[in-house]
Length: 263
Image (cartoon, rainbow, N blue to C red):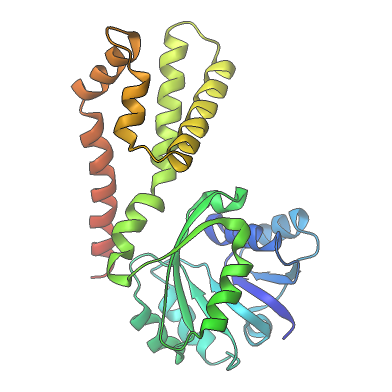
């Protein structure tokens, strides 16, 4: 086949995943109705191709559908008429099940993923589940192709919406937290550029500590809180303002919205 991977849709998520795959294989192509997006993508990834949908679909070993949930079934039906038997389709639409996608495509060679935007910098979280037509060889090839995107975790499809409400939407919550931390430091007199730098590095370092340490987040938090010190005052301020509840509610609100998309 002409391309190792093809991407229908080069927006925020589709483009981010394509950028990660490009680090593994330059043999990719994108297709997007927005010509500005494709032009920007190719400028940043000069060896990538640009194709019309009817030319890309039959020539991609893996075909990623990076379109919105409200249009994906229509796109899938069109794509299904053009698919080569050996192509594995990758879908990332929130709230749209494997059964719905495979029904429109007319094939069971489908991998459903829920990535997040940090895949563009190689630190994403990609949840995935596979339909019955995906072979072990297909799965291994997919994992190899997306190896530079971040962490991939296979999950039962019935749990994917709950997981995506955390990992898929979570980056937005983290960005708000980073901005809020910086705002607090600015209020205390720190210049904005330094406040943002310190907030970003603090979050990055804390995330690495959680990932590499065997400790529970609660224990890591306690390690920072000296008796009678400044950190415990800040922690109690967060508790007083229902920080934990607000963060948990953000995840459940996203999950509830996904459920509504299915109706």
